[in-house]
Image 1 (tube, rainbow, N blue to C red):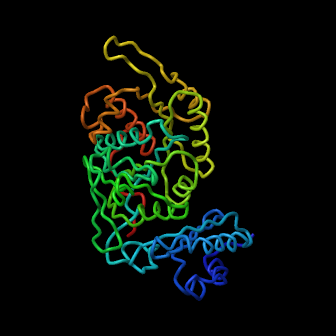
Image 2: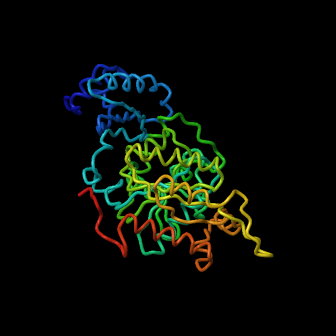
Image 3: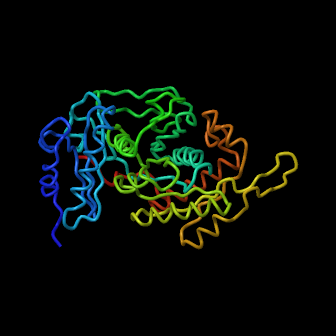
Length: 369
């Protein structure tokens, strides 16, 4: 079996015409090529997001041509847009671009918080885990990867804010409660829908990681969109995920979808750090009666069945919902509450899974220097 090289891929791509004339390689349309385990990913820099529709046939041609190359298992092409920059060097380290260090180069661990379906409280769980990790003394970031339903700006009390760009090409993350945050929700009005096709979504996700000045972080929590579609595959294959956490309610239908999400991460060799059972029970504030509205213990049994750790239970509690909706999550608004302590216990298990018992800050696992 011959090796797949970038030179060979570029040679194949040189036969595809660019919409503006010439071939896509000589015209600078090809901004990046990544090859891993016989899977090839190509980034096409189109400059202006409004041109995405006209470049869609070119994107399909790229996947067809590269996918037909000997030994290539799969080919994925994504459209990226840095409006007005005209740059074709987005794949270079930040140290090669005016000294601004951007991207994941100094992030020790990137952890995805995911769910097989919507409505299980994934984003609420993600933000409270991130804040709990901050309480453990870690340097924490939050990437809101849910392009169609971004929640983190509101949950962290910074909706309506916009990130600064020091050079017109990169973005500085916003900060709330001591954690760094980036979301598409900072770039579009809260009531404005994001009507994008898959390639633009994947390109936006890549840029929110690569073109953001994250700096040194111990952990970046990624609030994933629900399901197992293009966005999940993009994050799993293009981002060096240290692990994934699956959130589910106890009911059977949610557990079925959670199993699909877990198996997706396993197929792309991302370690599953464990399962969280959210909305595990409801405790009546008046009489203390415990009601299992969605069932109880299903996620723990599923974790045992699948051979993955069970990280803990979070109750169905109105204060958790109210504080998250109000931009003041319960881990910071009422840190001594049993609910906040439940999130803290889960955060400790995640930290231990990543670094071992008694772990604290350490040098980055990989840097751009």
